[in-house]
Image (cartoon, rainbow, N blue to C red; front, top):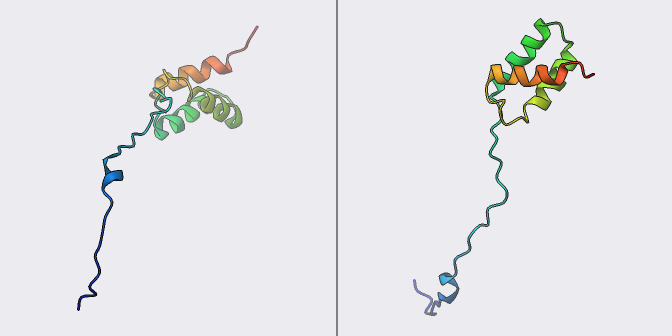
Length: 84
């Protein structure tokens, strides 16, 4: 059953291309979740409180060099070191 009307489509606007403008891109990759858990466990085994260990690991995770467990532990230990 046809209704008899004409369908028109305006293709003039189809020629426009909208490109996404890339925003600032972080080049840092967060360490994997397993590295975070392992680093907190290592710090607890060294005698740090769970609260201090978690805070240090969370802050160290922002370090672009802390991409695996050993580097994350080192970065967290630097944060926990006494400051004179």
